[in-house]
Length: 281
Image (cartoon, rainbow, N blue to C red; front, side, top):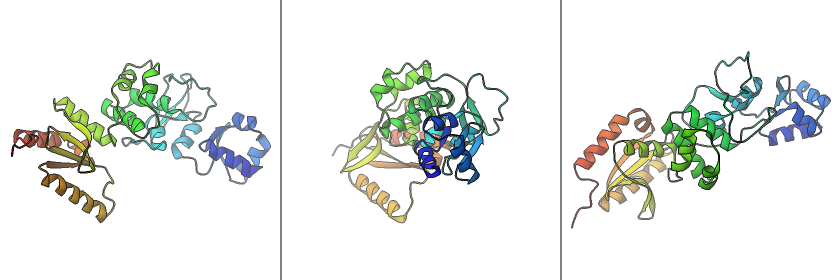
């Protein structure tokens, strides 16, 4: 029976309350045998995890909570900013917790769950993201969910969020940003009054953003250039744009997130030189 327990647990995201295991037919003896064989781990009296359980879910279960916010978003494959803490939902009445290395969330999210539910649904994750992160970071996570088609705009608009910020994100989030960095750049430009178009196709290739008629913006992620072939592809694309009359500005992860003044000054100088304008021939 133990292999069936492991498969069942893995299929549930690697973590479960023992009452849920019992409902599935795995009683105390089966669980005890799996724990004794080191095939599953009991991280709390009533919580068990599989060996391949994501660390954030394991940490959350150790305090009787659920991984949420950026920790859960990361495990779902969404773009997330870096976070040193594990974000964990715990009941509002929970006390005497060892929250070292954790950021605890106690608000009641839109999707109703019971305490023994092991995983947060995406809607609840986005709710906690909206309340927890700086607005631009939060919006980037929301747009990553839309871009990856894990949720659609109509669903977000129909949720009763009970959060002013989450309600706003449901209205303004789009699927056009290919990454959180693009959301950061768009919001950076919006703050200085610069309009742009996202994901513009030129010569059969996508450009991350275009300002005006001829200022092309390309944004490289943290690990974007994984090989010389990637770099050569970028050079070829920049050359194609240049030969079609575009000025190309390429910014990377560090510049967008940690050197915004440089990015803003560069864009403004390019516009002051008229590089966003079409040249009459």
